[in-house]
Image (cartoon, rainbow, N blue to C red):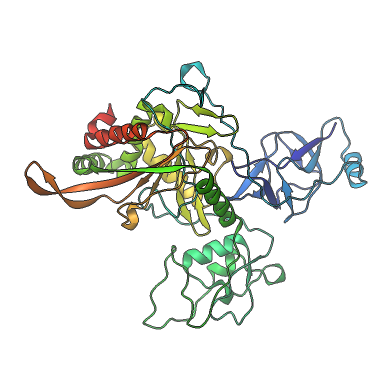
Length: 469
C-alpha cells in the first residue's frame, strides 16, 4: 500500500512545522533516509528525511503551509502501486487532507530512554524513592540570551530561503510600510546591522531574500553614529517607534521560559573558582597544539570538568517527568551549549561528551556552534540534552543566573575569568578567578547535593591535571 510521509518532531518542543521547500517532485525516486523537504520548526529550518522508499506520488501540502507533528504531508508509491493511481486516489479525496497546525501547546515532558553504562538501560528513580547523597539533578537554560564558550569567529552559513513572506520591523527610513523578508534575509540583516526596510526585494511580491541583503549598500552614516554589531539592533530615531512581531523562535523561547519560571521551584548556588593554574596549563597545551591548528578555550576545560563532576554526582545528569514523578539519570552526558543567534537562542547538544578528550571537545564544539548558527543541525543535535552550560564570560559578565528548561533539571551559568584581588594566607594577591552559578530544580535537587557538585567542579578546575587522567 502507499506510504505516507508525516511531519516529524524535529525538536523536543516542536508541535507543528512549516513546509519551507519541497526537494522532490512527482515521479522522483526516493530512498529511505533521503532528504525530501526543508521544514521550519520552532528553532530552525532543518532538512527532513523520508523513512520509506518509493516514488514520490503526491504532495498533500504546499510550500508555506503548517502541519501538526504526525500529520501526513506527502505520499510515496511503493513498487506495488502505480504512481498515477496513487496520485488520483489522494487527489480525489480518498484520504483526508492533513489538519492545519493549531496554536502551540505545551508538550509533555517524557523521560528520555537512552542507554546508561554497559547494561544499556537507563536508571529511572521514582520521586518517592531514596536518593543517595552523591548526586543532584540539573536543568537546561533553553532561553537565556547567552552564548557558550569563546567567540569562534564563525558566520552564518545558512543557504535556505523560506518562501513565505515574513513581516519585518519598519526602519527609521521605512516610510511607514513594513518590509517583507525571508527568515534567512532577516537573520543576515541583523548580523550585518542592515535596516531591512531599506532593502529592495527581488523575490516574489517584492520579498527581500538573501542576495538582496548581501548586495545592499547602506547610505553613509554620520561620523557620530556608532557601528552596529551582530548582537545589537539598529538605533531608533527620536520620536519614532518600532513594533516587532515575534518570530517563531522568539515565541517558543517566551513560552518555555514562562512555563519554567512558573512551574519549577528554582534555587541558585554560586561559587568562586581559582583558575590561575588552569590558565597556565591552557597556555602550555595550546603551544603543543599549534601545529594541529587547535586552540583550547577555558570553556573547553570547564566542559571537561563538568563531565568529571557529573560522573561523581549522576543525579545532576538527569531529566524529570512531573506527570509520572520519575527522574531518569544517564551514563552519557549530552551537553547543551547555549548559542546566541540573531532571532534568539538555540541550544545544540554535544552528545556523549564524556567520551571525548579536550581536543575533540574543542573541535566538536566549534563545528556544532558553526552549524547551529547556519541552521544546519541534525535532529539528534537538538534533542535529548541531559545537562547544559551557558556562558556570558566573553561579554565581560562576572556572574548571572540561568533559567531551567524542562525536562532537564539544572544549568550551570559561567561568568568571565578575570584577575581579582584575593586573600591567600595573610596576603592579598592577584589571581585569575571564575564565578559560576548553578540553577537547580528543588523538586529533584537538594541544596547539599548542588553544593557537592560545585565543590567537585571547583576542585577539578583548581587542580586541572586531574581531568586529564
